[in-house]
Image (cartoon, rainbow, N blue to C red):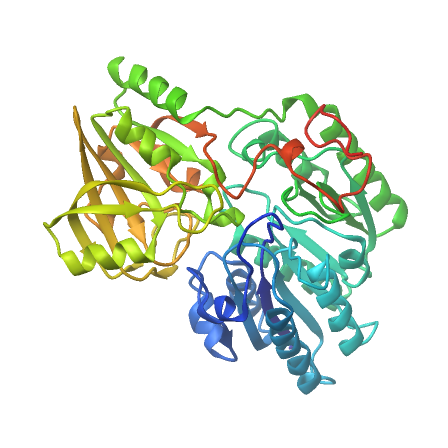
Length: 505
């Protein structure tokens, strides 16, 4: 039997403490992700990409399904999604479903799970409520979610199934779309009945740097999760959450689906207990820029044959930060490191000036410090070593297949007493998680002694192979990794603000 499935996507990860809102133009432009895409163009744009809707399309076509694409839109993480942007995209989705009413067998949505809008703490919960109201109580509505989703009761109530990624870096985005397709097939064919659901909350916030699935405890937690999907249990998701979201339901969750309520409840309880028992292992390990550089220097002097990677974790565009703070850059130059590169520093104005000056020019230039309160611009004399238009194809496992359009880019070189430091400027805010972002300007990251990356964890997918060691740097940025320092107003009382830390009062 041929089934007809409506598909759409709407993604945003909201850092409510960040300075810039996600306006409609950001979703239309895409900000490093594809621009807002409608109709059949969704097939061409997304099927080759490591992205959930791409995986769902590939899987659905293999099953012989008729897919009805409506719209897909995303913007880089930032502060609140404006009401204009939310209503514009949400209406496209519900209008599309209205046009298809009576002709579809199910709905698939490619969502993030941590969207906060100007009017709704729970953006996805409100979207799913509208979708459910449009299609009725019986039509299956299923969605993929980001690993960092802050899963809410409304999201679970208004959907039939939610499946989150299981890797961070998110190497399984397309795979997750395929997982949803397999579960939907079982529902449509009657292989499984409509599933019972269970939602559980973990009682502490988890730092993002402790959520990496290459490392413990998450590595083995996700292995255990996979082993628990058996018998009556069809699906389990553990979402460690996105802590810089000042909403009541922020935090880690488990969602279980099973043939019976008893089985769903038991699976959710067992996994929640397993995670809570390992609370002390979710360690936060941050170094100041100077301490990180000193450690890197000792490793290099000790004969490190690979690069030492310094992750500027708090100025990551992928967490809503401005990606233009200069604490790590200034330290690399002032500490006189012999050979380093840092990127991506978001500064369209400095990139424009570099392009005007031309390749080979030596210019006195101020970079960074334009968008984040308290950030200091950095001024020095730079050589414009390379220029390009910011258009290239990503090849690393996280962004694989994404055609970047980052606007004018520039490689600026600043001499130090022992050598030089390169900084890569871009004109569209995006995190440094693919080597092509550097190769585009003639830099082979693995050939540099120190590589500074404005990313929190996703860079590990493409840079771990060149790393002698990875050090997490605590430099100023709009993403604050220490949740206990954030001025929460809406977060529910009682949740611990860090593993084994104090409870939110």
